[in-house]
Length: 249
Image (cartoon, rainbow, N blue to C red; front, side):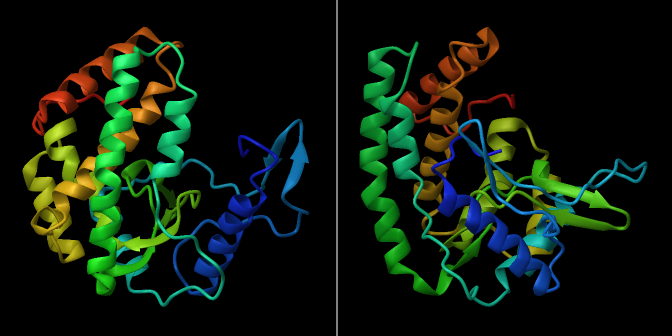
């Protein structure tokens, strides 16, 4: 369910992406095209997808994610409109609507977003060869096992952008979430590139972590544990501490 019934273009892109990926032979989750969709209901847009039942087979691993991203990034450009990757409007919207957050925190994040935006767009413009279709939110939680096949699901953030963006969640998980370096090394071997060696890694990581923090900021009034985690992340961002341990919520 989309948050608003005004997000027609975004929902249409998700459905078009899924259909196109399936047509390419990519392991994607098909929409239920036997049903009319999307449907507007109570201020939201609802879409329908094929159900994948639970399985006793092993859960998808980072090795599966690496293989899927390598295959995704090798696909041709889609034959429908895909927006450019631009995380900043969403972050600004979150900051404008911030509740229960100290003004100093909002001011810091707003300034950090402004500082990172020019660097991000300059990085993208300087390396057009690295530009292509990206999933936009590529982590293990967006993998789903269907029998012997692992699917890459959730096409909300699909965009055209630097492919390195899809490698960031796994790379930063070593510092932030305690991913064993050996697991990251295996991910790199399978995908074929190490994003931490990318000349724009620091810029891309900054943008990604600002996005993660502004997302968490939306929940501080609902959960003491998330408020505490937000405070921890803010402290590490202020200090520029890339090694501070964060916690997945």
